[in-house]
Image: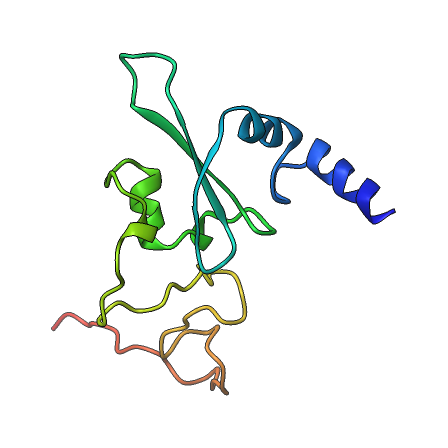
Amino acid sequence: MQRLKQILLQTFTWWNGQTMGTRLWTWWRGELVGEDEFGNLYYRAPSRIPASIAERRWVIYNGYADASMIPGAWHGWMHHTVDYPPSDYSRHDWEKPHLANLTGTALAYRPPGSIAAPGAHDAGEPHYEPWRPE
């Protein structure tokens, strides 16, 4: 039953991993380049048109397809900013770990004074000092 559910999800949805078309293209033309810390798999295939870009690059997400789950180094490779995949690079000490986009979640950043920030707010207290001409 679980296998049937997975086949139906891959046939009719694009946001749950890979579709059947992507699975076939990956099997037929894809060359596995690497994997990131989230389990996303990165592939490439040489272009068949000489005047176009040198190769096609794509990612198969581990679970829900969310572009913010691609770390910065892999993002650069995906967009042909760098020629070599990040698996060939060493990580610097000053680099922070990748964080997904938390907008729209309970963990999103709320600046002080925001009505969405946690804590009590006094409805009668103004949150700003209005400018008044003299």
